[in-house]
Length: 598
Image (cartoon, rainbow, N blue to C red; front, side, top):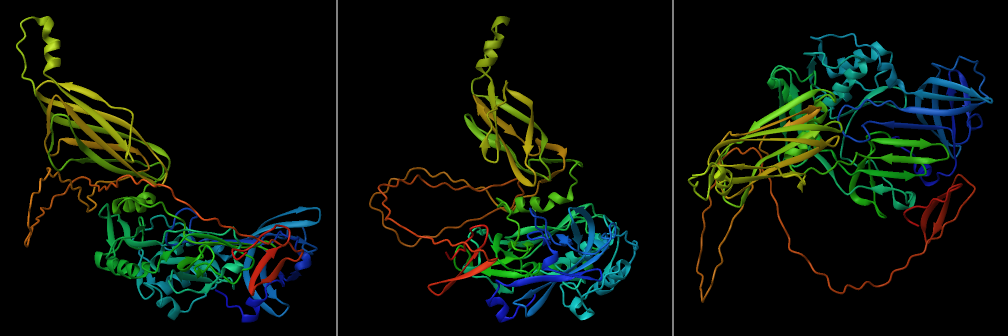
């Protein structure tokens, strides 16, 4: 965060823009009102991940700038803001990428110096060096100044480690290289206000608080505190995904995919991972979308608090995306809101989604590790599978079951061949299949009838999958007219499709059911009592837990009346501060906007 003076924070209704385009100076008079805006982000708007290398973008419509036609592209723009004609603060350095003319106005789009790293990388497999050396090499190759000295880099997580490039992976540009290096520091790469490259680590220290009197009432705040406790990484040589975690392991999973700098010895990889695990505990942020009249002092990675109003005095919100418009206010977004997972397995799948290409054909298979016995008029689960995909698609499910059926009624002797079918029907076992998708029963029940003996039940189901979500698929089998026995390994599950992610691992939970007969207690006295419980370890294919609560009946609830009044004032100034009972309110001209304090 760029520090503002106390006076600058107290009085924000008067500020002006100035800067340079190449060697030419400009000010407010050269900017079409409402056209100047810039934005930045360090994560994808829908998914949080380490290693962001976002490019800050600027757009503006200029008037009266003496630059010849076809000479705007490549010009460097430097922006500053002056508060109360007294204090000047830098905004950033941008390079014009495109320009168009219309009625004397030149509209431009420009990007910060991160775009200069979009050059083919000139290192190869076997390159080795400290983090500071890697950053220095990237900056020299792309003509960007490094904004950190060796001591500042060494203070970062893994900042004192050396990195060996075992394989190129998906590294094609210097920007790709910066992505994987910033992963190691549990943060992101960005360009500072002076146009220099820096790495930022996510932290927990609060940088500033913004009270409700300065936050517009359109702001929103997420309830979930999003934390991370595990890391997945794919090791090419082993063709295996390894999972590392903190204890307790109760947060989401960060997926590193096929990290080219992690393809080293197990010992070295664990050094990197342990340093990262120590740092991801700082990520405990709430989602938010907050609008305030002025906020150009904030940078990506700043940690804010929003006490009072609809916010929270204890929750933390990290600036991961922002938008600022001159005459239009400042909008802050924190960590993307994640759909709550139902188990640790689901969280791991969520983290593994990006390891699979959207169009890569993948398949998964598993078998039951315990025998299944289904009594007459009983139903047992054959399988539970958790499947995810990184795009909206369909998975083709095949299940083959080798079973043995025994009917309750013995087979009758048939004297007349015409009676054989009725005889079979009377002595057969009926198997009824039920499908559940995310605990919702599917209105489709395949049914087969078997005489005594061994049989094969083949099932096929087309399972629709939502993008980036975990889908839970279950199959149950009911026996009517006899019993069904299935040995260990005789339920064979196979799923295939494009972009699928599956997991057949046990997620550490037991499904426990206990049936207790009715007790008739007559004049019983209790002394001391003890009980012993033992558990045998087994590796089931899946598990779940459930709980139920009886219905509540609410009778005659009365609410007292409540009333509130709001005074809204509009002003012709850009931002006007209003004092009401000692509290400060802010309204904005043009649109009627009022703060959470109104």
